[in-house]
Length: 166
Image 1 (cartoon, rainbow, N blue to C red):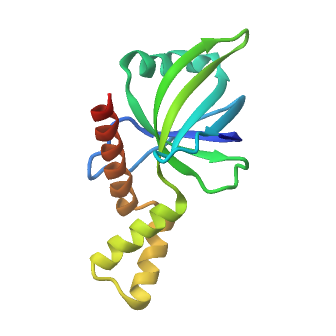
Image 2: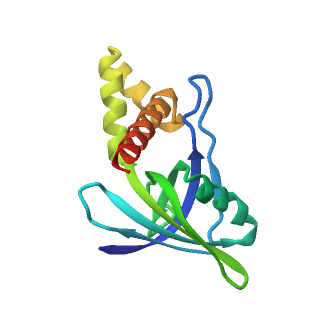
Image 3: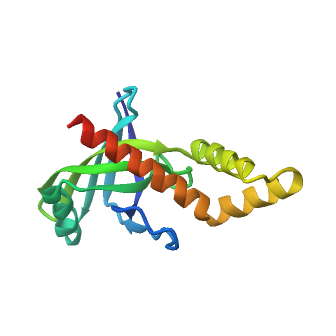
């Protein structure tokens, strides 16, 4: 196992967005955080987030409902590219001035994964040459519908896998 500093967590959604909706993230301000790569084939991670107490009911709701959610996390340095995980809250503990939230996360996409999937989608749509390059840069910059579709599909696949394993 390898342990890293969790620099940021951004909740993307707990249900895939409708086709016409844009993904809107909700950043969760961390007091402190750790993320542990369990180094398993399933790309499973453990997250520990120390948060202000105002987040207690938010995460307890996820815990009580056993609800998964998609999140983007940055590791080690805030300027690093985020990884996308499907997470499930495993515990919420009260500290003196804060709460600590433990989550399990399955990685669904890293920057390179999204780039590869986006490029494959553009090729399938018939883009080529300079038009391919320009559309790729545009969608990547704007996190366009193609990336939203990729994330939604990845979220559904992980949810199905997790529910069938239980």
